[in-house]
Length: 102
Image (cartoon, rainbow, N blue to C red; front, side, top):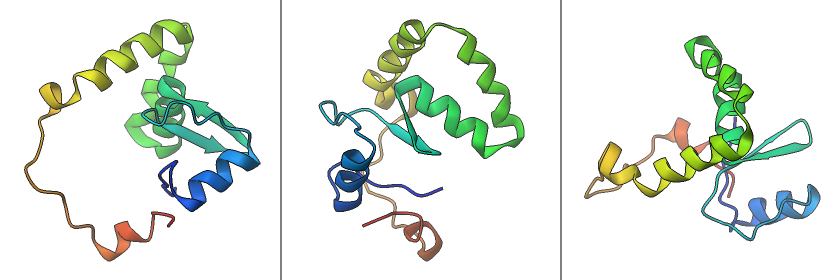
């Protein structure tokens, strides 16, 4: 699994190649097998691909996307209140850096 910012060169190339709309740069997009997923669908597909206990969350795909995306946006808006905010950025390890495209 690799990561890229939508604003990066790699992100722009993937967006153009797969016709991913980049009107909302605040959302997560997950690209798999030539298809992209946004918001809650992206998170659930990524968790499913991680395997292990994370696969159990994929059952939430039975919930209609508008309802899942409502909760995705609610959590996204309140993420700092829910999960906290750090004063300093983490310095990534060499292994972690390797997972990020330009």
